[in-house]
Length: 237
Image 1: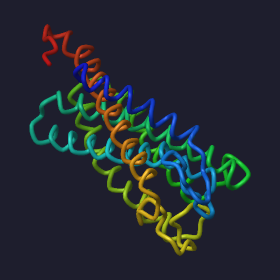
Image 2: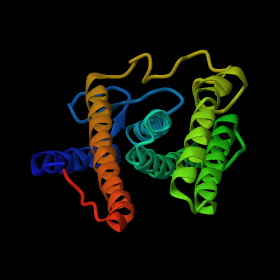
Image 3: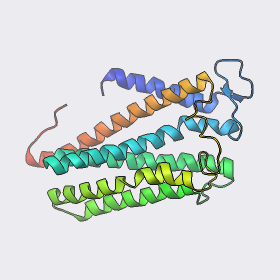
Image 4: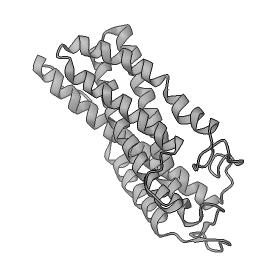
């Protein structure tokens, strides 16, 4: 990522953090920096600037890993496996951050950090099955065999992601917004929020997206150098 994008990322993240922490939530906003009060969320509405982008990017990361795995199985190009691994590692970190931000929200909304809510349980299950993939990779020494087994596992596992993230939590009753017993589809999806909150939300998506891309590229480069330098090949931007 060039210096211009890095500078943009820095200022975007600073603004999102300031807005997400210090901008006040009021029932009748009069100034541009005042955020809209939403029934059922109140002051906690600001978690959407962090929790939602992290959750979406986690899914995108696992999708990227799946696409890279398919490419490897078709081409046998080991660099596609490196890309898949980078996506998996960054996606796993973002999923942990999604779980942590969700737990913080749950503490102030439900009274405890962990409630075995269907949404919490489903994301925990994803962490377990993707964590098992890392264990599988570490148990296989042969690079090509490791990449092949990992690719197949990754593709099969991703088939469960839409079910556990988008379908199951909406089929059962839950404390989480958007569940079967929740009549609304949520303020973000319905865009039932004021303009400044929409601006902050989309800026948070952009900033976390840029951060995700930067971390993914750095991680991919590290994996490439670690594996390819053994064969005398060098990294090329």
